[in-house]
Image (cartoon, rainbow, N blue to C red; front, top):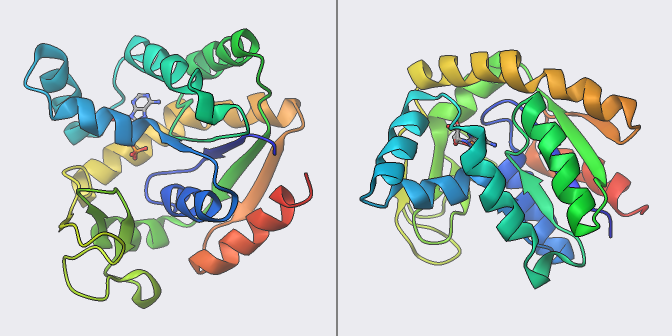
Length: 218
Ligand code: AMP
């Protein structure tokens, strides 16, 4: 199956869609945000730098992301396809990603751009909760995505937490970062004819239906 990439503003649902694709097609979900959140737990210079930068809503230095992406994509489980979520986040990263893919002999695959209104984003960002053990994503502002028991993961029983950067102040910075740094990469993929635009204002299942219609064809 073709590789999959998401481009979307914060809390647009890319993590949730990636989870749904992984469940159906059994390919790994590689989220730079998840990997960086693990690094942020380390009590080291890099751990502290990543934790502070993420909490502020700004992007961490490009160089940190390149090595972790290349290492992760080199693993055996990526050979039959993978989902990349949260990378590339700017044009330099997109150009470096093309090089990493060429080096590993992979194709870009399908790139999904999730379009969504700011109002919906604000609602999602304040309601998002994440499992500290398995990273499953919930939303307490959406009955279809709320956990069955408050603060407990339906999948593994882990404790749910609210991300430090999931507040309106950090959201403003993250959204501004998206518009300034990430949106320019859209053109990069449109030119390569790999871009699919998806209306993400709908329920998660409907968004998945639109995405799956494309994935299942190739
Ligand atoms: P996410 O989980 O994708 O919303 O990412 C959360 C935060 O991790 C971002 O706001 C950035 O601080 C950092 N981050 C994730 N991916 C990248 C990336 N590709 N480049 C730089 N920073 C990133």
